[in-house]
Image (cartoon, rainbow, N blue to C red; front, side, top):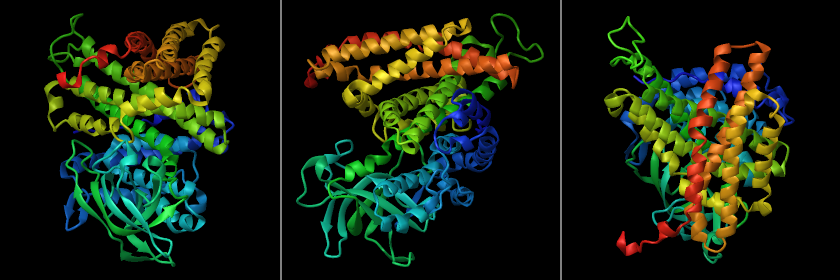
Length: 591
């Protein structure tokens, strides 16, 4: 049976030894000392291991069922949600004015990784609710905030985001859902939305749908989109629930994975809606929380890679098969454990080096989101906005690769449901698609983010890497980390320069290499993280404190990434510089 073991020790190391959160000048970070974060992570880890993880297979096997318009979630899900609700976890980083705990987003991400690793499908219910909370908090009126936020924070009410329609996904300018103005200031919302996660269920008394729609007579395309609050049940002036609104679940999607989450077709038949913010400014309002939402999806990719690695490692240590070619390793057994074989080690090291480096990258990005919000720091906002497409795409693509590699460690057992490895692969797969497909993330990075503010933020990133290399160049032990990082950074800069020289002449040249460029960027980011991890590990070893084997293992794993994974930037640069000619040459009719 698959299991989940909390990653509290590694999270503590990244937060305090690598990122040094307690020393940062971000409001609230001074309170995040080791004792405090340790207590939070320990409790969150227990919930992940003991409450959420045992329901992961249950959710996969039972799925959700639509019965007479009502969605039934898998057994045990509501009890688990009550544990999260009662412990205040659903409002962990939310505004205290509305019942939240006001914790830094960074610590919320650390908690979220463990919870998502343990049960990705279940955690999507409070996750979507948090997205609705963020949009209303940023753009809602004082009355709307008072009406909806306390119950969203407590998860007494659920929340959703309704963007996609049958005829359009990425190109939201094509949406057809209408919002007809009424004399009382409300709107009648009519249309159909698809792929709405957590769109209908009974774990919350009410569900607050955030719906993109067009007001008749508005501008064409995305400039004519507005955002509306459409509650499942109308809310009376005293806060109690009134009549059912004209919104219903018309069906559930049969999906490859995340069976425990209700992915709904939502029908709006003249439902009463309330405008959020200004007319025709809905897309901007919906995208307010996009950095956090896309980091959250990256977290899902990393989380599934992490739990898949844990289980593959346990299998590799237990499964005996043949004898190691360099001599018997476990003579007391009938055969040696497969962890002694180089190809199995390769797969496990691929997973381990990605998960641990990716965890640091994810939390580093989270600190920048905190800095941008809590310090009103425009530079931090610009840098994290540049990196978010990389966080989302790289962590999900390589997360899926890691989950598949973990499945491969099992051999034939990995192809069966009994061992659970195949569920991690199936659940992880969606993360490359939703919240903007990874191809869209690459286009966003190359087509918009690189040139943002005249390239200020990408230059700041390169300067950050350069400064780190220079500051640590006197430590000879760091050479094996700094030299590969320097080479990879030069590859990335060369690719960016090639885009500048060729992309304006032929946009297909730039866009054909966009995904390769994004993956180069991801490798450089993880290379930077592993260099920072190495520095922290050497410092801990020099101080003679802590677990010596833990820090030495970090150095070994980091060396693996620097020698076996980071050099991939050279291949990716060659592909970028090949341009788009061979990609675009074949006529569509000849495919």
